[in-house]
Image (cartoon, rainbow, N blue to C red; front, side, top):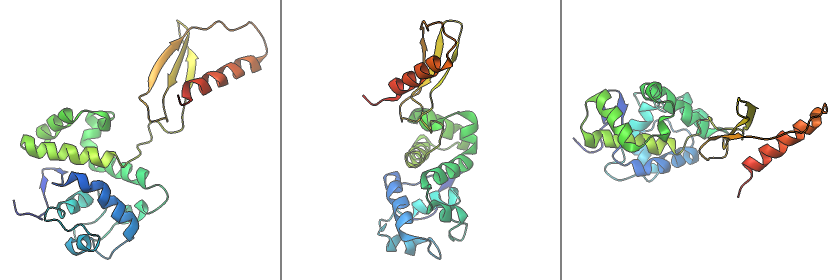
Length: 206
């Protein structure tokens, strides 16, 4: 395959320089909106290696640019106050089939992603590996919002109190069942204070 040409197999694109994806999006934030994002633009932002043009494939796949290379509304939105969320939305749309098959594909191992891309595109293992690595590097820059807000939810179960902790902290969410004996009282402040203290304890940084 000729270096610098757009690369895509079936419906999933990839870049041969996935390690530069973070640099690419940093350049986008710093450079604003160019008339067109093409090889010349890559040169202007110091992405000058022979394989760097494959990064344009990723931008087109995510609809940051159109087929002619002109930046889209997605690009403009990425320059706003919530770039990680904008990127997450773009990833969800571009990788719709992947998100339909896996609830949180960004949490899956590379080998599972490779198997998915091979099955979907009939690509070689090497190419599917690039697809998986491209996807994983994109996800590192995105905020999918599943764990936003530091939520702790509690409710009664048959065995005690069920607590979902870890959401919004960047940690893996864990469901914990805690058996407690609360004092008998009609003062709901007692229970409210208990749950507030429990939430603070579960979410505090060690």
